[in-house]
Every structure is written in structure tokens, then in C-alpha cells.
Length: 295
Image 1 (cartoon, helix red, strand yellow):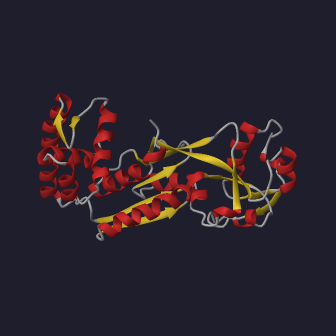
Image 2: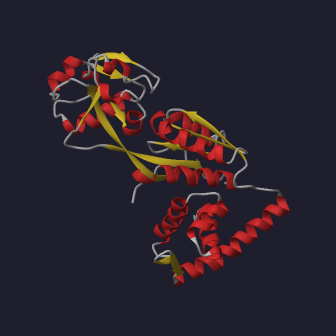
Image 3: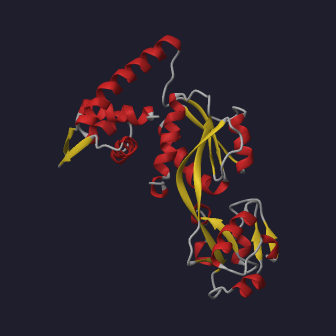
């Protein structure tokens, strides 16, 4: 399904004929407009524009999309007038995600809310199982998950990847299996799962998380690295959780031969209507995670 926010950006660009003025008109950045056009081109598998210096010409595919898109946008606008207003930048949008990706997304979405104060972001940090229940029960508009859903009402689309990292105290030397066992493992709610994925791919001695000498536990993602700083153990965390940690000079990210990444899925209820404000926030989530998106 073509994202209506991306479609409106494209049609507005064709109408105005200039990226900067289009960005100003839509209260966006120029790079944001460019990303929306690129995502449409990737989805359709065809170029929509031919760039010519600071200008552009519309391709045959772009012309067809513009004509059909303008018709659809007009019908949507007419539908809003008939059944009620459905603004793109006003109202509450409820979403949830695991903690790590939330540390990257939430500040980004707050900037969106700052730009549009009538758009209210209701963000929850939750494990995958709870997010699935929230989507299935219509408690949130959409969520991000790192595993497949078991509920048939929850529709998932893979959108990005997040690498898992082995984190050691800053002064620790290259870790062998025996040294890791001696150092101890700082656990967290997803610790056994993350350690199993990363250690299992890189250490033939690893068989199960029960082998790990558990020397600490925290269910607060922003505190998991504190005992690592003190030399009390090592841990395995997703990239965004580590990137958000301010005392990064006190830890060491140890590169491993075999990289392991979790797939980030965006999930929504299969039969739930998506208002424009939700489409706006979903587009912002996609833009935020663009550097780790799946091609």
C-alpha cells in the first residue's frame, strides 16, 4: 500500500516544481521530501523523476502516479469533509516498541511533536509479547517488534535491522570464551535471547544461556551498562541501546567475526483503519530508521 503521506509529498512537489519550496509548504526538510520520493520509487520499482541540476522532469511512471494520486488525494479530502476531519498533524498517536529502538525513535518523534504541537505522541516501551497484545487489542495504533507475531490479526512488515553488540568493560582485553565465563554476564529481559544469538554465532563452546555466569540483572535499559563500567560483567545489547549510553568511553564494543542483527518489524492490526496522523508518524519512524532499513 502506498503511504498517503509520501504520495502527498510527491504530488505537492510536482505541483510546485521545486524541492525547497515544497519542503517549506509541507513544513518538512528538503531531505525529508527527497526520502519520501525515494521510498515511493523503491516501492514501485520505477523512477518517478529525472533530476536535472536543481530541477527535475517527471517520468512516464511519475506522471501516471501524479494523475492517479491527485485523484485519490482529492477523494480522500472529499471523504474527510463528508465524514469528519482527519488531519495529518493533529491528534493522539499511540505506539510501542522494545526499549533499544525506542531510545532512538522517541527523541526523534518528540521533535516531530515540537514542530506540530497538536500531534501528541503516546509512546510505550514494552517487550514483543506485550506489543503484540496491544496491537491485537486495538490499544495502540502500531508498534515495532523484533520477532514474528503469533496472532493472525497482527500484520508485520520488515523495515530495518539492528545489530547486536558484545559490550565489555573499557580496559578488558580481547575476550576468549573462558574469559567471558570468568567475567560474568549482566542479564536483562532480552539478555538470554540476545546472548544466544550473538555468542552462538561466534563461540563454538556456547550451547545455551544457562552456561553463562550471571553476575547482574537490570530491567531498565538505560542502566544495563552501569555494572559493565564497574567491571562486574559483560553483556549483549542492540546498537541503539549502546548508542544512547552517554558514558561510552567507559565501555568497549568488541567486534566479532560473525555479525548478528535483529530484524525490526512494523506491526499494525490487519483490519484497522489508518488515520492520516498515524500515517504521518509511521513515515517519521521509517525516516528515522532509514540508515538501518532493509533494501
